[in-house]
Image (cartoon, rainbow, N blue to C red):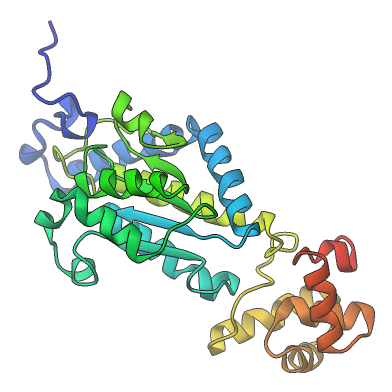
Length: 302
């Protein structure tokens, strides 16, 4: 007979496969962790439909001038802030377009502020400070599904008319389902080290967030083919990448790609339109704006 778990949350249960991990060799520990990690991708795949619904809602909010705001504590909060911080350099988004809120504020990014997650009123206050409205999408991230800070934030966001999502790694309770318009629940199973949700649950969280923002950026026209045509050229690595993208798409040599990148003000997408249509940077920008940023509608397929 299987004993009833002391805690119904999947993230807090003991993993029977790792109960003797402290007796294993280093290689055996590595193999065990790797075997458990292989469960993550399948668990995320099984949530493909709610993830896709989330993407559709997020894109709709973006097109209305709204934002995607992540809310979490601990590892969940850090992963939200990480995903948000990667959007401007990757897709040339305004930093306010995707944002992350973490319980405990900036200091919690570099040092654990565990008690900060216990106060739902602080989550609600953080939503008020962001001036959340009906055009925004607020994604709560709490792998256990019980973090008071996150529940407080989602409750306040819904009061303000925002659309909401909840990302958990446990069986969704009625309270979780009631807290959001869409629930994403990749069930990765108990962690190798009981309750250490920075492991499988953290990996699943990063995969889901990557999928949401990447899919949204593709649908907004910030990708052409599978090329990153709306990135910020802010360093030599990205300048090199921008030139190579222009060379790939336009079939030009490096000097011409460099000239187009300069003429476009470092905007790869604008450089493509300049070259394809023979217009200046201002006209290329205007045509892209008319097409809602969808470059394929301006210059055709890749």
